[in-house]
Amino acid sequence: MQGTESNADRGSWNSKLGFILAAAGSAVGLGNIWAFPSKVANNGGAAFILVYIFCCFMIGYPVMAAEMAIGRKSGKSPVGAFKSLIPGNPFFPLVGMWGVICGFMILAFYNVVAGWTASYIFEEIFTFTGDLSLAAVFADTNNGVKNAAFAIFFMVASVGIVTGGVSGGIERSNKIMMPTLVLILVVLAGYVATLPGAADGLRVYLVPDLSKITPQLIFAALGQSFFSLSLGMGCMITYGSYLNKKQNIPNSAIWVTSSDFSIAFIAGLLVIPAMYVAQGSGITIYDEAGKLIGGGTLVFSVLPTLFHQMPPVIGLIVGVLFFLLLSIAALTSTISLLEVPTSYLIDEHNWSRNKASIAMGAAILSVSMVIAFKPALVDTFAMIFNDIGLPLGGLFISLFVGYFWTITAAKGELSKGHPDFENSWFAKLWPVFIKYISPVLIAGVLGASIYQLIL
Ligand code: PHE
Image 1: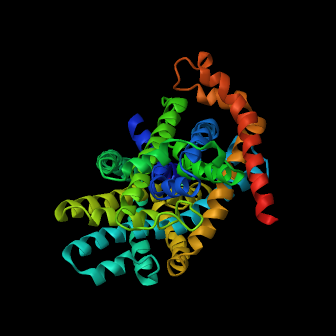
Image 2: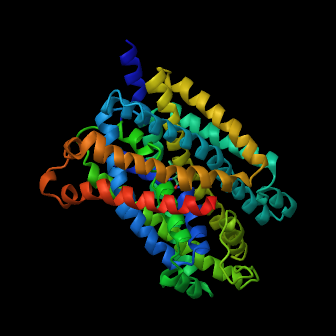
Image 3: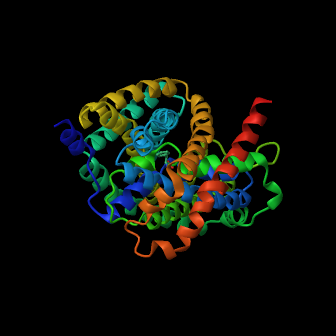
């Protein structure tokens, strides 16, 4: 009876496209639109993008396929998945637990940043109506009470969708939200390209200066790729656990990876040129050292300037749509972040979906409340749980698949739903990437960076 109950609460995806959209919805979020452009600016423009592409496709993509395979084979979220694939191993369930903790902590700060995006919808409206003091309240990322209110709003929305279950809640909402998001982003990027000053931004964004590739840039690109692709904490294990055997995993994972990369790329195509357009109206975009200013408030400072200079009604529509788009993108990611700790309670402790998501939501929200009043913590949390935590998880997932669960077992799972698996390039290359390339590169980059941080 218990089994039936938890199965009903686990759920499954209704369609092939539904899964891809939900996984892409998890991947596409603040990581693409808020974090990526600012990392590009901080790390010297196009050179960052080159390293980032490498991280996404050579490290991220193989790990994503591995996570989905682990999830589908075990039918479990991370802790249970590791337990069931090699029973008795005491270490890997801890890796799963680390994933649950990263999901918890990332969501705690993500909620606050998501709240900033939603509050900028009101900033745009009040700027348009001329209520400038009200607009300033909504624009203030340091206003604790306002931050807290919006973080609560986001958590309630995420809990609402996650309690709705896998196909009804998560899948249905993503099907509508994802395509809308892409459409609005492309239109805006196209518009910005026509404005004076945009050409300078496009040059910085598209013409790489290879001398800018530093160890720090590589560390930033690796962490950003894991964060943006939702990897290293078992999110794709969890989403994979709702998959049926007909889905082609290598194929789905390449769709998710390339759409996530493309959307980040388009977001940069919007934000970086917009910085140069804003410079034309007196906004400072370089620091004293002559470096582009990135940072957590970049999109919130540069883009509204752009919107406010548009003809009144158009500016209002574009500004509101943009921040609405960001909020939507954030919501499809917060639900996946919440799903990981929630499904842990459902799978490992037999909680009902309602009880699990409400309890986890409340616990995470209590940490969000601290961050709401001390927003500088966002950077600290991002450093520990994204930049270090996620690649670390990815390292152990690669080692797990390559050396413990075994490549043969993983290939057995990956071949299901793939008509000509044995002859595919994927079947030949993936084992090499997951066994050698990904663990060596992740360990190298993490090791070097932690060494530098400590010294
Ligand atoms: N990928 C999401 C984004 O880019 C964030 C996320 C990270 C979601 C990890 C789930 C797991 O915004």
